[in-house]
Length: 101
Image (cartoon, rainbow, N blue to C red; front, side, top):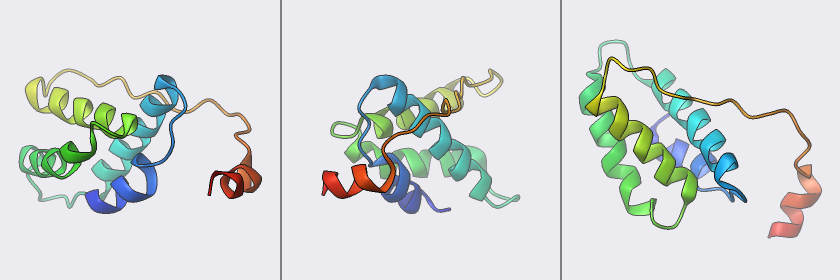
């Protein structure tokens, strides 16, 4: 999944809380990381992703957390990242999505 697709389908969604923004950013980071080719330079790809995402960091909390994850991973590559997975819960489903439009 390219960085543009991660941004538009996952990170630029409505995050009601900071915790939800962290969950979305973690999922986006893992999807982005999994889509990288095996021969790619992590640092170059991370800098490219950060450059693409940075303009949206001021308006989308999940994008801001994603940018922080990328920045931290470049600065301290040997330190594990805290990537919380979402807690299973009902979030409103299709009805809530229809009401948000």
